[in-house]
Length: 290
Picture (cartoon, rainbow, N blue to C red):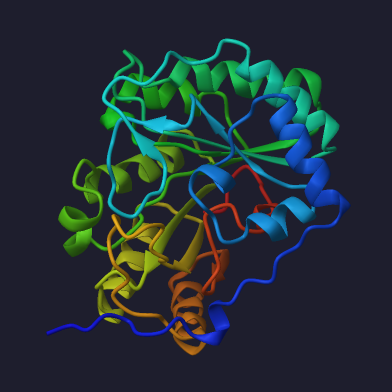
């Protein structure tokens, strides 16, 4: 019988930051009624990133139509319609925060005809209009594999196209039953092969996977054209979510980093607190890596 991962180790203790930059970021986001994945997904890096004046903007509201067992974002079958002012609000926030690299993500909106793709486009264009020279990273959902929706976003040519596989194939049924490993790989492959975009993906560990499965997933990503990867520890948001299987050690994360680099990834972030957009500005967006 599995007794769980035990007490949270010292390396997972979070240092809180509450300086003036943290307060300014929080005030700005509240003033514009903007959602961030930092807050909605209970990211452990919220204090660090907000203290540095950075945030990942969450498009299409803060309610998702899917119910992935690892994610803290709220779920409903039919969330409220997207805020038509959101693209302009985000563009203004990027300007106020003086961001050089803006990271966008969104909830899944399977209730919308285009999955929210047109809203993505409006936001990207609004940011570029107000902030010429800012690079944009788009952490997109799979749009249920809808080629037209995917093309709509990819045609805007964000500097980085990010889509997370989240976990290894054997854990999909337990972790993200409404998604597909093959479909997620196909999203990455489309961005690289058809649009020649810089591509990025991420996964969590400590969810019941084996080291061999992680290595296989990394090689799958490279084979499908992924340039950059993030690997981080899964942390259970609430008691209602998927339990942590085990806490992966810093040494194991370093091993995963070495495996990823050896597989050919140009840039790798691997560590307990690493998340998809963690230190995203360090990923050197360029048109194409491979």
